[in-house]
Length: 250
Length: 273
Image (cartoon, rainbow over all chains, first blue to last red):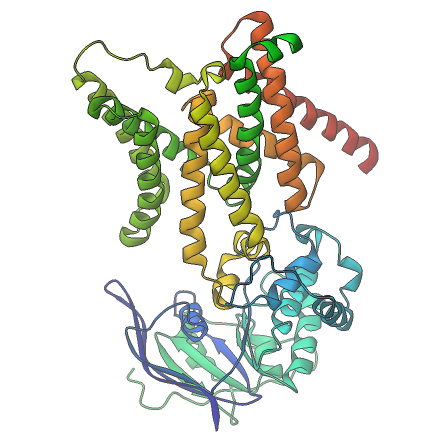
């Protein structure tokens, strides 16, 4: 049983085709990495999954009552906004049925504090959001999406512009979350992608899925990105190679 | 001046409208700063000049014409920039000058002596009528109820629109409501300080408040208090030295902002480093 199925999804921006006939099935508790060049449609794909963009044709099927947790890039909001960390995280408890004079319950705040404690950010609870480091801010956004108690966590470049320690920290955290939840993550980070992720979708208008038999083919990555990419990572990170895209003409 | 307030209705009205305008300004001003809608607000203010001209031309209360133009331009800029992907910045510029041009045109073709436009351009808090005060109170009431009854949702929308949309908050409806409230506030302020000076009253009190707090609600409340104090101080100075009230209020506010920002920066360097 798949938790998400995309069937023949097409998205156009005006006359430009952004996504071409995408078929994607995501299993429960899968850790799916979406990679591909800039402008290749990764973010568009994510937005289709989140319901922010309606596809021009095709279907996105999800299991009933599935809850999505979204972790945006932290360039997507105003870091100077006068809001403290706890209030950012509590946002995850808001629902589409707006209540007049809504107040967060004591239980909501307790749950938020538990999650913050688990993620090691409880001490920042009263800080203004912009006063955190990149890694801490990313954890706040992950905590916010965990407040929804999502079945699927969808992340957009969670490690962009983080130093390698912070990156490893975030990936370790995601690995833990993955034991309970499905994770879909857009990433540029080839090194880590290959070691933590269960399956990979290469998106460059079209989508190529690599499941259990992941191995990274240098030439193929080069084709997808249009330039050579360093596939070697430091340390003992396992190195995998993806098989060729079947039926690709070139 | 204090005895004068008890003696003259026009001073009482001026005092009352300073308080009422500061409530709308404190709340809406804080929002437009955080949502980066200051340019849009300037555009709305100037576009409404077209409505004032139209009001004179067809013989209705000019401020009602301003209301219509302000709301149409607020919603129009949002809608058009989404549909045709023009930079909303450029679009705001066009509305800005087109509105002014229409105003000038309507006034030119209005028969009889041309009306005195200075009170709409520069405002005059001393000529505010009782009906304007009632209108301001109504708008304050609307803003306070709408913002505070859905405060947590507004805050989420102001901070992170995309996430709010994903969790199902109707951000598009909130945006329309917000734009209408901005338009209403601006028209109310036109009476007080005029089209040209409106932006100062919307931006200065919240900017001073932002120096003092990191909490959205506190910033709104402090802006309201700061606004009242600055308006009354400005009004006093204009009464004392017999200079235009709108300009005096704005200059007093501006000076206060720069002095407070300077004091804060001194304070910071002393404590910070």
